[in-house]
Image 1 (cartoon, rainbow, N blue to C red):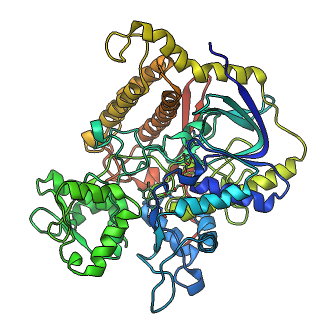
Image 2: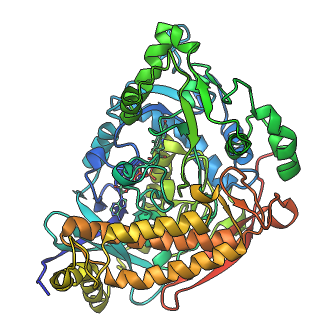
Length: 610
Ligand SMILES: Cc1cc2nc3c(=O)[nH]c(=O)nc-3n(C[C@H](O)[C@H](O)[C@H](O)COP(=O)(O)OP(=O)(O)OC[C@H]3O[C@@H](n4cnc5c(N)ncnc54)[C@H](O)[C@@H]3O)c2cc1C
């Protein structure tokens, strides 16, 4: 085996992932921990990493308390309704009460926020959204984190967390530099995981040359879930995958179109179809369909049923709005600051929204914790408002001592978006500083033998390739290894066909899930034979490991919840209705990495806001 340099880094607080939440965690840790060593480690470069890499056009979570526009309680009610009753209200309330202060900081740091010329308030796009000139949103936020951190390590893919060799508490993390190949051991008193959500676990609509085109960032590789799962952290709501209605082929956002441009949808025959489906949806989910706004998944459901009834494609009616030059500009700018690809797709498909109403479609499912969905780790809540059953330590600490999280990593708290994720990172950072101060000089101990074993395991795909390439039969194909891209495509196919992806109209049942788990088990065995020809492929190999473990967790949760709570996100055909009597609860799972077994249980949902 080629010798690789090992670099040891000691820290008080280690932040894994420098996206929105990671930048918030780094910034706030410094504020409360002036003398602490705060290290942020990121697989890309925090300047342009994560889901906000290419910028945003709106901040989707802003209360506007200074103008009495909304109160935190209103946001909890909104998120609870959208998630059909199941949110951690303590976590959501905690974010909502602090998020405005975060947005004010962004503005202070140079983010241009649009203002209403008449009221001089922030320009609203909708009840919760404000409009920004956000092409440089991420670099602005990253600058604050860079100045706050003791050290930022870019280009390091974190593969595993480390536990204290004496007890169940976190001790750091390991990974490798994707450019130099050096092995890194980070030893820390507290770790905050903020490594983003998961795309590419279900087969995407765009395959082949278009496979990089997904709605959630293609580099969101489920590390935020796999890292805590591997050390035994309890997870929640992993069945609550998200499906988005977006402009076809480019995944361009529709929020500004609906809310600001006041465009609307219709079927292929120019009819408003949502009302057709109201009664049948009521039979499935009861009164949730009568709530305002109608939950996101139910709007997806109406679209899907309409297409299944043969009256597709569904179109966004843009031709009226785009006659107004101001609205036309806003429509295009909305893409140029956030999803340039959609503008390019329209240009390449001869779509001028002034002349043609563009098609909408539903995306493949993603797993994330910060949008209209709330998969992630089960976290301890805020001391002043979390019910006692949701409190076992410090705010945002997972069920492993010293391990914190924010953004997509934390479950149960939907609708945080970019500003709420940064805010949750801040909350986690503050709590982690308190934890570190309270444990004082006592440092967790890392097992040297474990680090050596992990080092061997991490570079194994390169060894597999070095040996297996001697048997290449054609191109890069060898009987002795599988390439990361092949493993990824196999994963996507399993998830699509058995766990409710686009190919199955988001539908699954117990026999399908059972077979899906068997096939995932075989895929896991084959991951031992991954082959990586260079460091780039080694990163792909570990991203695949993380995606597979997160997928297994999603499948276990989907099997456990015997109802269809979120039609439009996924369907359990064997339990087609919402069942509030038995399933108005969270699902929790815990993985045992030694036995490979999962344990699942229910946890109560407490409504602390009326
Ligand atoms: C297309 C799109 C449109 C959106 N629109 C809006 C909008 O209009 N308004 C809004 O407010 N929000 C919007 N969002 C949501 C917002 O971007 C997310 O809620 C937010 O970025 C989540 O923050 P996070 O820190 O959890 O994840 P991210 O910001 O994605 O950060 C995760 C970080 O972890 C790093 N990482 C991952 N794995 C590893 C690893 N193994 N080792 C080291 N580093 C790792 C990643 O590179 C990344 O930097 C949108 C998102 C997308 C994708």
